[in-house]
Length: 174
Image (cartoon, rainbow, N blue to C red; front, side, top):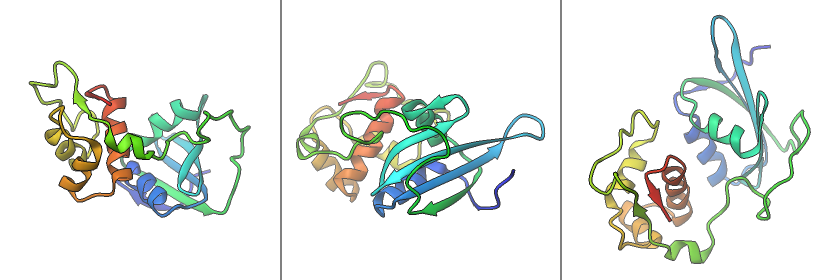
């Protein structure tokens, strides 16, 4: 059944907003699939952390990675829901698929990976935002996360989430 929810052009923005607002509930998302079909996924939030995700046969972090890259899609957030309609997965030790940075993580120094220490990646093709590009351009192998956060005018936890996206697409390491 198709959901009639809010339309977004970037599901990552919705996920980050729910995280920053420390929301608890289920985010149900759909977008057009092949032909007249549609694809659906769900993300479970607890106090702003994504703790479970489902997309087709994918579970947990693999499902989260696919859904995070969705662009034009519809979504509905069901506040205070505490389970997905499918079986829960076992979580990492942190209890979250997307971990909240600890203080020691704000002192880490991100570094660009070859060949990206010289050449710029195609941010559009990687489906990364302008904020990702801005942060990537400031990474010089000398600046810790806390300084990068100050430079871009964002909270260190936001910057850490952006950095983890850059790590996941393979352009930097922490």
